[in-house]
Image (cartoon, rainbow, N blue to C red; front, side, top):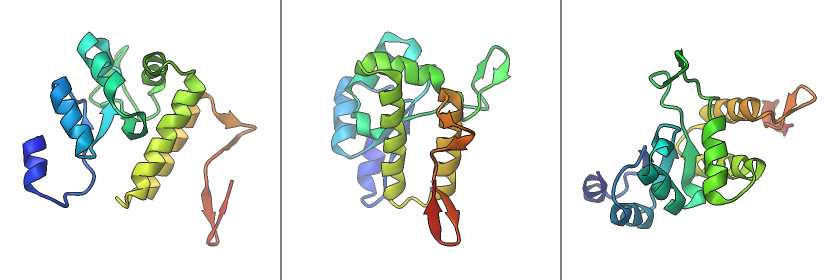
Length: 152
């Protein structure tokens, strides 16, 4: 995959889903500016956890592999990232709130890479906040567009 990306300069931002390469390939991907999505299945193995620990935290996103990923007979949804956040908080040696905030900030940074994902960003942020209980007084700390202005 990395060889193919190098063959096409200007490909944009690559997000490597469930990266399972070697530590050397991970270092190469990081140097190339790649991002990484991590799901709970990836974190089940020692190799997956070791790779996740070496990924730049500002380029890590959570994913569920849903609707193909299933837990307790139920297809996973975008908001089902609580387990990944909990595991990543252990790997990064952070509390879960800081881990969640880091991942949300990473998604915002990816959005700023001009991939045209504002609506996807809003949906994922909302799902992540619902999953992790970050809804205060019935309102979500999410910017909504209203007559050209942002409101919280």
